[in-house]
Image 1 (cartoon, helix red, strand yellow):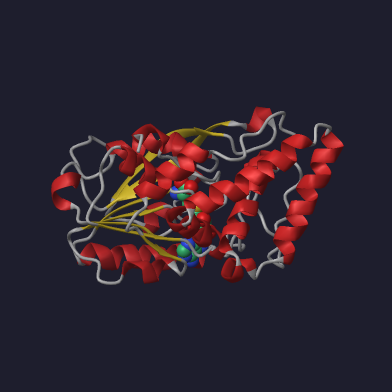
Image 2 (image 1 turned 30 degrees about the vertical axis):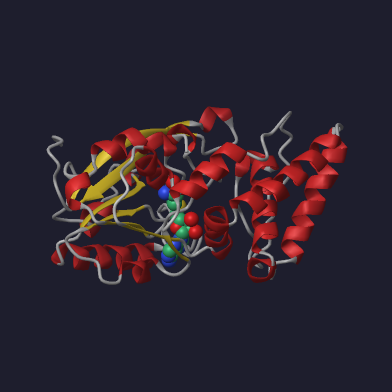
Length: 306
Ligand SMILES: C[S@@+](CC[C@H](N)C(=O)[O-])C[C@H]1O[C@@H](n2cnc3c(N)ncnc32)[C@H](O)[C@@H]1O
């Protein structure tokens, strides 16, 4: 397995590839010697996990979790059925590329999207087909977003890429090998931490608390993760801290747009909180792309000065 091909197999909103140098610098210094269990309760595309695996940092136990059942299904399919997945995705890629005009490709995209939405049961009945369609849509949809409506239907429009790489065989096979033995859960973040103790290291990357310069209204539900959920997560972090579990957490930095916003300072009082900059494509409009303020919170020091 070539290590450089180990990387996220899906593009995911909030993916942490841009923040990897900052996260790397905040890992426990003695990771190799002391961390026996690594857990990511909000794994998404798993940028940090794949980064660790690519670096050869592979503790005895690895636990990943995401409450999105289609995403957790995709992780399991990549782990255990990569060859079938590659075959199914390759077929979709061939069919897509056989259509050369934009309208033809759009029609094909919409047909796959309809089929994906009509067959939610595939998650149980035909998990490989569901993941192949999900990854196809991820590579050909607008901005590579995964967004569902209130009824759970994927509703991102067609993406108009000249020649998208739909089937990344090398990455899928390398990820599959790297994920051997990884425990993949699809529940609530709090349930992924049973039995956590001092030999665990946990990275939390919850859905962002929305940043808005104009509105003081913060606690609307976005992806089901409102301010009450942020409080619940902070309680879990405090409990882990009491058990001697080391953890690192990232979130958006509200101070970038509202210097008076002390939400996270209150929530994580007593822990190490620092602001970092990550460049990330978050917005379709080029002029709104750029450096995003993020915060990293942790309950341990690793020698990196604040
Ligand atoms: C910011 S994303 C994680 C991004 C990831 N670090 C990456 O690099 O791709 C947050 C994830 O949390 C998941 N999520 C939302 N609420 C959750 C909950 N209560 N328990 C577990 N996962 C949850 C979402 O489905 C989403 O995939």
